[in-house]
Length: 423
Image (cartoon, rainbow, N blue to C red):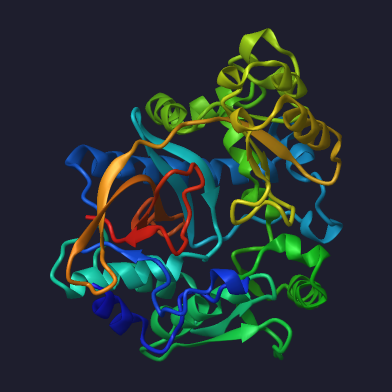
């Protein structure tokens, strides 16, 4: 399979290691499965249902913010610069719920909107299809979604922070966004020159506005000129905290009505109980073990504090597993410190989410000489990309990949992880 994946990658790179010790020196810097991950018919149906429900949820939360339903804007505006606090509907091509395969089914640990990993999902899908495997995503589904919902020309822009993914961003520009009279280029934010009425697709995070001068200049210009920026500069939709709203006393009844009872119940089976630090009194299920604040989790035994503390969104620590702490692994002292810092931080939101352990699943990967298969017991994260545009395609699966890791709850792409397409 390595040769088939390399053929699709072509002259692009998948990832440039941010630190020298992580550089594998290989074009494909991860373990390769000889076949796609197989899912049962029931699992595939559940994924499609998750896509339909999460895209609907995404739109409803956007409307709630614009209308400031129940004061939700006051919560989600925490830490945001004034330039982002505008009345505009969000514009995204997709929502990507990260799904952990657990003993009880799928569990959504967060919802992403950034394109990091999107090119890899497309590369894997094409490569396995080229080898004759069936996959969940039809050939051309991603390109069709992009072409129906973006201008014919523009720039996909990456930053210092996201430069490690510049090869994937260039692949998207060359192979997905361009062709048939369309022309998109990948650009480094430090060197980009834009004309009036420029179209950009963000290969960077909005929180970089506070730390990267080139991103600040670019976004100031785009927003002031009302130029086309996708995903839209609407950071409230990029908060992990939006998953907590379905468990919030102030919003759950409204969401039940807007989603419908069946979708509301389904989402509550796949979204783990989640609350915002400092908003514990609104957590509808009630705090665990009769505590009243997040910081009191430190007083519980490790077995009773199986919760994950996360930076929610507008923070340098809210991406790529940064700012994620499994509290059941930490000492009492460290847990107390982490929760105190989250509780007193006024620059951004933090959430606590019930931990759902990944199921151990046997997988194989190709040996170095590609002549045999090596066994591995992995916990698996699925990253399906669902359309969230208003063109009748909401919830359509446009890309998906699987990542498997051994002996860790941080299930992410690395040199020792398996990354594959999904059948």
